[in-house]
Length: 160
Image 1: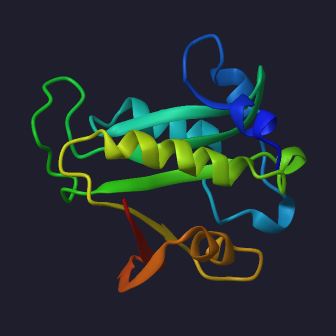
Image 2: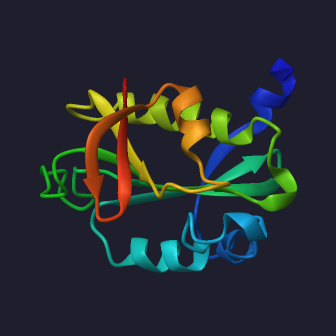
């Protein structure tokens, strides 16, 4: 991927003016069940003190969505009870924009952000096993399996 494309990828705050565009983004049919719809994620974030969500943009075009569980409360900056870890809660790239390096570049930006946060040694995530799932992507990126499960998902982490 060219440096020009990487520089055009950025994370943008979810606002009243862009959330409808982010809700319209969809995964491929064979990927359904591996990530919640963006509408559900955005609703969950509004009722959580620990959610940090961003649209993934290529220039002015929304191409995906991510959400981080940040163990530092937004309002007070106090340490929270969200297991004390930074957790990639959601990552999705729209079906029309997959296989262009956007997810990798968005994760690069997310890891850069998390490194600026207090006590950020690892970024955790989890995924449901299955055909067409994200396991191969996460392991190639550098995540490692922790040997733990959360509900029916495999827990992974990457050293920051």
